Structure formats: structure tokens, C-alpha cells
Amino acid sequence: MQQPKNLLACAVALGLFVTSSAALADSVPELERISEVNIPLDTVRFVGTGYDKTFNFQVGVGSGAFRHPADPKGVIYTVSDRGVNIGCGDDVELVGADICASGKIFPVPNFAPSIYRFEENKQKGKGWKLTQVIQLKDSRSMPISGLPNPFVNTDTEEALDASGAVMDFDPNGLDTESLVKLSDGTFWLGEEYGPSIVHVSATGEVLERLVPVGLDADLSEASYPVSGVLPAILSKRKLNRGIESIAVSSDEQTLYFILQSPLANPDNNAYKNSRNVRLFTFDLGSKTVTGEYVYVLDLPGTFTADSSSKQTSVKVSELTMLPNGKLMVLERVNKTTKLYTVDFSGATNISGSGWDNAATTPSLEKQTNLAAMGLVPVAKTLMLDSAINLPGQLPSKVEGVAVLDNKHLLLVNDSDFSIEGDTTYFSVVELGKRISE
Image 1 (cartoon, rainbow, N blue to C red):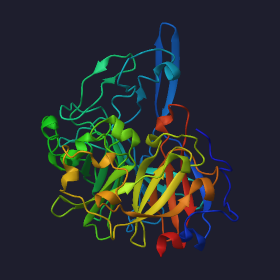
Image 2: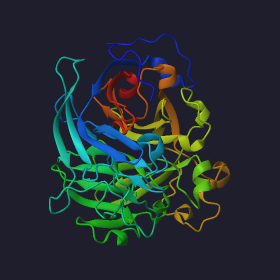
Image 3: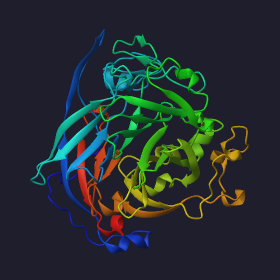
Image 4: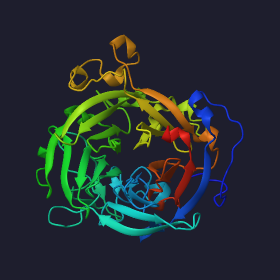
């Protein structure tokens, strides 16, 4: 990962910049402060014939971030994902040995996905303090794991330990990626395996996991409630590209959630080439989907700090409700982070339509001319392009955004548990009127 430059700079004022959006003319974004967040997890030694590699893993707290307006000033919550995992295609490079052929190595299999509460030091620029860890638990108050689920009606992957031995699937396992907190102290999480959205108590107990219709039967042995209420089409999510982002309306009546990438609908070729991601609204009172909209990803070449030409490199990694009532989407590759606000007015609500039917051909993901199909995607307005506005100043893989106040956002990156030595950074960016008016 390219490390951010000028980490100890107290403020970074940029000069003139070029942008395609007139909305960016009101103020210049500034990186006010950036802090390292190091939380040791475990030391694991991979050893065998011809290899001996030791990892000092750090907790990856940056898969999502949120601040509730009623919480004390300087308090935020973040969430981890499923824990340390190494793809079997990467084991030779990272470990030095061909440990496995397929699946993921989980060298710390007892890790429980968790929510983390942080407080900023009262002296700004002095960093953040971890004040609470909320481990996710089942209905018996037993910590759950981040191991893959035993799916039959969608794809899954094997989990292996550090020696390469296959471990059992876990019907309780969660790959959490985003969070919001409600006024009652409970949380809603976006989750990739299902994909699903998960309601969690203030102490971490899973109150309910909502999955696509049909997948609830695969999780019948879970030791917490599971309901199949989300559209069945979501079971076509690309493996590890599930519900990456979640947000909540200011009245806490509506959840918003979005897939990280287009569905593999009808197949992986559609996923690889599509730019059409599904964005949902969900009524918390009735526990039903009320809206489904198309969000069109940018082309990979527009992420100018990166050099990828693959559409699959472009991902949605966060949703955030801004103080001005607009929904913000974080779109990224690795080194380039873009923030967009979206406008639903005029957009086509496809919830319950033929686009949710897996038999529809060509599928939504195969469409390259939405207008010809009578479809209007949500409108996007660019707020920040880090390659233009904050060149070289943010870490790679920014995945979490919390609104600190009417002018400032906190951005947090996913360090992948420091598998490759990366560090978590909390970056405070001033956007001023862009988020408040």
C-alpha cells in the first residue's frame, strides 16, 4: 500500500484544482489531521518444510464507521470484517508455501467480528483512544466467528487453518462490513456472506439476520434468528462482494444498503463487465424493501491515482447520511477515493419488477443502455475525488466514513489486519458546506 504523505501535518491547504462538478467550487477540501490506530491482535507462525514466516496481526477496525448525532462529541464507532484471511492464491507470496489450492486461510479462526468505540483525544491531533470492544454474539451470548456459511443456494468457500487443514462451515459466521447505530443503542450491520443485514443489540447479541429469500433454509442451524426477507436475486452476489455499505435516515425509519459490486447475474462475466449496482431502501417498521435503484459505477480509468483498467476494480465501500439529508456514496479503487451524493428523484424504482427475476434476459447487470430499457439510475454529484483534491494524502482502501459535525468527515481505511504490514489511519477531512447545505 502506498502510505499517505505528510502524516503529521496539522492542516493541508490545497490550491486551485480541476473537477468536473460545479458543486465542488464552494470550498476546498482540507485534510486536517490523520492518526495511526494500532491494536495488536495475535502473532501467528506459519512453519513447515522450506518455510517459516511469522505475522504480527493488527485488528482491522476500518471496514465501516458511524457517529450517532446524540453521542458525545468525538465519539465514533467502527466495525471489523470477518478477520484475518489469506486467499489460497496468495499463500506462496505471503507465507512462502503452497498451503492450499482453494478457499481462504483463517490463521486466527476464533476471532469474533466486533464493533469498536473510539474517543478522540480532547487535544486535537493527539489521536484516538479505543474505549469499548463489542464482540458479536449469538442468542446464547457466545461469540460468533467470521468463518464462511454452509450455503447450498448460493456459493461459499472453504475455510482452512494455518496448517492448511479444512475447518467446518459456521452457520453463525458473519463477514461484517458497515454499521449504523440507532437511538435505542442497537446497531444495524451490512454483511457480505449472505448477503444480509444484521440487527445487533447494544451488547453485541445478534437479534436478527435478514437474508435473501431461500438462504434462510441454509442457515437453519444458526443459533440466532434468521429470516429470508430480502429479494432472492441478491443470492447472485459475487462471492465476497455482498452488502458492503449501510446508512440510516435521520428519522431512523429507513435503512439504505448497497452491494459492493454488480451481481453475478446471470454469471461471472456479467459481474466482470457490468457497472450497474443495486441500491435499496428498507423500512425498519415493516422489515420490508421499499425501493431498489440502479447506481452506475464510474469507469476504472477515472480513478487516476490507480492504474487499473478492470471494471471489477471499482467498488462501493460506504454509505453515509449527511447533515443536509443527502445520501453519500463512497466509490473507490485502492489509492483513489471518490465521494458522491445521490438523488433519488426521477430514478426508477425496480423493486419487485422483472429485474428481480433471475429468468429475465438480458439481466439488469448486462444492460449497457439503461435509457433504452426505460430505466433512470440515481443521479450522482461529485463531492470529493482524492486524486484531485487530496493527492497522495489519504491511505489506500478507505472503507469507512463517519460524520463528525456539520463540516468534518472522518475517513478510515481497511488495513486487512496488517497481513502485508498496512496500518489503520483515521483521517479527518473538512468539507464545509458540501455536507451541510
